[in-house]
Amino acid sequence: DMKVTQMPRYLIKRMGENVLLECGQDMSHETMYWYRQDPGLGLQLIYISYDVDSNSEGDIPKGYRVSRKKREHFSLILDSAKTNQTSVYFCASSLEQNTLYFGAGTRLSVL
Amino acid sequence: GDKVKQSPSALSLQEGTNSALRCNFSIAATTVQWFLQNPRGSLINLFYLVPGTKENGRLKSAFDSKESYSTLHIRDAQLEDSGTYFCAAVGAGNYKYVFGAGTRLKVIA
Image (cartoon, rainbow over the protein chains, first blue to last red):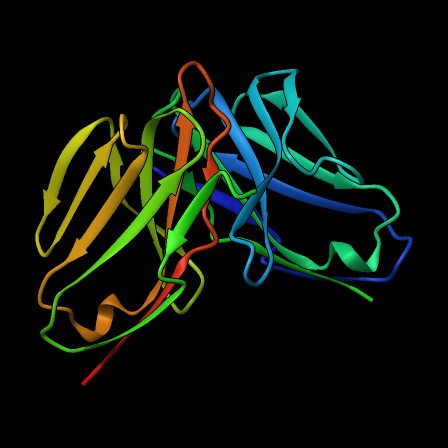
């Protein structure tokens, strides 16, 4: 079963707290992505990972970092979260440039 | 400016009618994908395209890389087609898909 799983689905944090969003996939895809979605802006790429420990900035990497220690897992970390990082975060995976498979998203509120 | 521009931004359709959504690219796109985000927020794959056309049921999509655009045609619209449609494009040798801002479609009975 081809699946991208995101945890948690909903998260409320206070400004300044650290945030860890986790993503897993069972398709052995080399490439994984973190996007954020804000109203009217579509999806914006935060980071892309081409494989284990091979990560690259997307269009809006400031305030985020990522970790990929296993091919099937890709984490997004917010050190000292800010209120403007309130958003819906989507993880995706793909085989090279092929079809993107998305997780269900994590709705993060930073108060 | 926008690398991927979608039009229209919003659309209301009577059930049973047809419509076309469009994406224009200011990047040298080699691959395009179309997604539907349903009212629950899930992103559903519709099409993965290299230059050419694909059809799946009531949906048909075309991608013209020379003219830098892609279209998504919806035939005989149904209530369950409601949601936001996104296109995403990427250039040769690049895996960083760029998304448009979406077209919000509402199908009414």
